[in-house]
Amino acid sequence: MKPLIGVSTYLEDSARWGTWDLPAALLPAAYPTLVRRAGGLAAMLPPDDPAAAAAVVARLDGLVIAGGPDVEPVRYGAEPHPRTGPPARERDAWELALIGAALASGTPLLGICRGMQLLNVAVGGTLVQHLDGHTATVVGTFGAHDVKPVPGTLYGSLVDEETTVPTQHHQSVDRLGDGLTVSAFASDGTVEAIELAPPHWALGVQWHPEMARDTRVMAALVRAAAERGGA
Figure 1 (cartoon, helix red, strand yellow):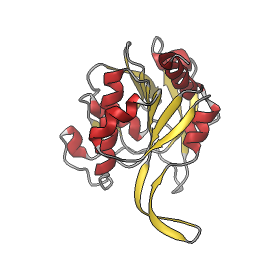
Figure 2 (figure 1 turned 120 degrees about the vertical axis):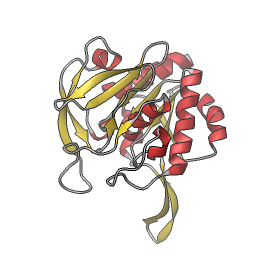
Figure 3 (figure 1 turned 45 degrees about the horizontal axis):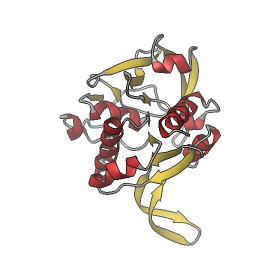
């Protein structure tokens, strides 16, 4: 059986499709598509009661924390920057609980963009609330820049060459959380990947692998999930 990979989602007050305009749990289709391309089965995880996170994670083989809005600065003891976006408190609470449950249970974890930032915050790190040069000039599109792996890291073992990646973020890791290692940098020194040492399989990437053809990062998560689940 293919590993079951949970992917966190948006929760929007209003979304339109067909004749409908209703509250909706949303996830760009590129996420489940990438999970499938990498050999897994995708399950959407909309915001829920954080107390349920451990029970949810116990049913998964792997977990992806998807991209999305800025993490509320109170989560890492900071005041909001003028350029920081409005809070998404339900997502913050739910996804931090999912991360905590994954780390406690040894469930393989991949954080994408916001998900990487939340991983850092979950283990005591902080964020740069605004930086330039990592978003596209056209709203609603992705930019691109190069990232360079750090040899000897998990990410470096998956992708050992400098690559060009799709990017869309204006925040980044500042102080690293406890136990984290930087495993990739952008050319301007911005932290682009972080990871926890074994026995954890926990990796965060600042870019959007779901928008690229390269499946190596997601495939590694799916392999780790299969090994853990005995698939």
